[in-house]
Figure: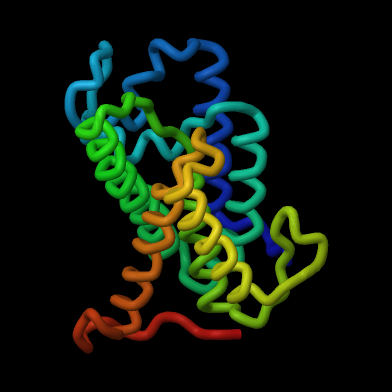
Amino acid sequence: MFARLTAATKVFLIANVVAFGLQLLLGEGPMAWLMLWPLGDGGGPYAFMPWQLLTYGFLHGGLFHLFFNMLVLFMFGAPLEQVWGVRRFTQYYLACIVGAGVCQLAVGWWMLENGGDAYPTLGASGGVLGLVLAYGLIFPRQKVMIFPIPFFIPAKVAVVLIGAFALFAGFTGTMPSVAHFAHLGGMLTGWLLIRYWRGQPPFGGGGKRHLRSV
């Protein structure tokens, strides 16, 4: 389950830890412009800026939030990077962060339009759940453990369970402080990108197959 730490995964781990250290050192104010703020007027001093679609994915709301995301990044990122290489892995991870952010922007805009409050989004969860999805597609039979299930299950089953929970929680308001639709956005972006690389619908045959199942 635990692969050798690879170059890009190591860089992302360090970047997240450094960013969290800056959050602790500088406080929320100076770092707030790096969080992902909803589109539209939220009645506060901050607003959406394009760079936030990347920067929010390197900030975290607390030590446990950081630890859990970095553990998942290490567990699933390193074996994927060994298959894809540094460049493709980096493209995939950052694309999932951006895709998760776009999905969260859409949900945040809808909430504001319907009288909801404007809250910033931060965290690498959209990116790391994109990695979990990719792991389930490339290593579908590999056994993994996901909290709170106390035993190992096939990776492809874990992906289905995580996606189903995020969908359920998003529509029912379970754990409202969690950006469930951002999680789904990261997974959807990863799924679409992998299908593009494989040349599968809804894309044509232009993509090359760079993935293998184990």
